[in-house]
Length: 91
Image 1 (cartoon, rainbow, N blue to C red):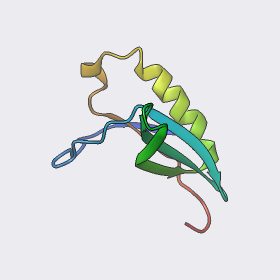
Image 2 (spheres, rainbow, N blue to C red):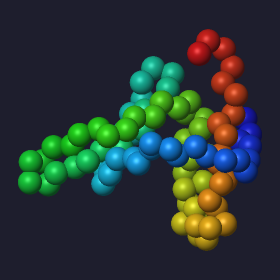
Image 3 (cartoon, rainbow, N blue to C red):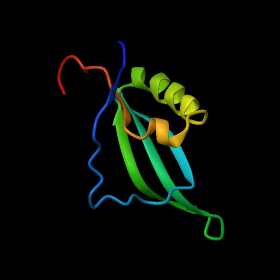
Image 4 (tube, rainbow, N blue to C red):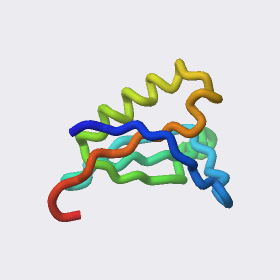
C-alpha cells in the first residue's frame, strides 16, 4: 500500500477542533483506534475528544508524516494532505 500526497483545498468552515493533551492507540478487531483525549491530572480521568478508526497498515504512515511535519514550515505544509490507501474488502 502506498500513500498519496495531494495538494487541495481543505474545508475548515465551522470546524474549530477540540483541545487534546493525550492520546491512546487501541486494537479493535481488524482496525486500530486512535483516541485523542483531554486528560485531567486533578481528576486522573481522560475524556475522548476525537476518535479515528484506521487500518493498522496506515499507522506507520501517520507516524512518518507526523515526524515530517515537525520539520515543515507551516506555510509550506498548509494545503498538503495525506490520503489513506484504498481499503480493499468489506468496509
